[in-house]
Image (cartoon, rainbow, N blue to C red; front, top):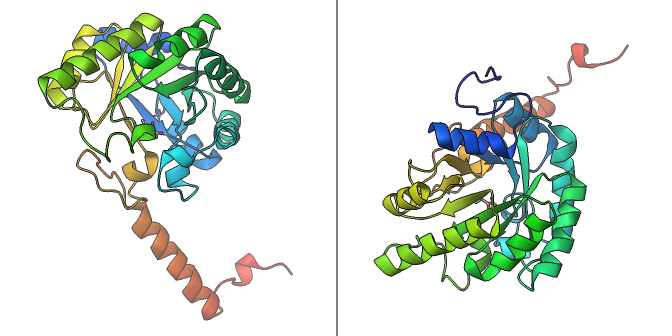
Length: 275
Ligand code: KIV
């Protein structure tokens, strides 16, 4: 299927869940990036990215918080709607914010419905067996669900910081059990964050639904990165991150050049001025 990028894209004019499942069946990895605003989302759509995630990482990448636990449901609605208005082709996933689903299926459903009304096509929530009833309630109401296991940022305090999960046999077994519980509850895909590559490979093998890795090695069915990390705009240089550009350098350079030209009155020139 021809896409703007030509290769590595799973879907046609509109990416749907079944395209991710087809991609897994065919062993063709797909790409997901976070997106929070119009122009970045449009750039990722033009690049053929299959899935856009309006992550609660908007709190730490856009809003200046130090943890995603500070991201609110209203933040998620605002940024989800912005991305939904801006792109068409990628599958659009939005995070359920911390505190909007842990209390039970009724709250999960209420907040999930609002995210779908804002333009999301799937919602993501963190956790394993403990939130399986929430997953089921959402799926029963017609809301597709993406799980999130391994390092789950909303539990950063309980997990004592950003740490690789499932390193020992018991932890790896627990992750696999949680992944199966989420699948059983009806989830359509699951993110695996900061998980040893061989553990992610094992989970990917046993699950029918696609896994999407972030710091989980190459065997996952798809990969996701926070876009500001992927493009070198953030100052996060975790081991699992590859910066495919140096936007921080380029943006700083552009702003510096602008400042200099304003100071020396070379900008605006006649070509930027009205008669
Ligand atoms: O919010 C987010 O950016 C995420 C990714 C790390 C998967 O959940």
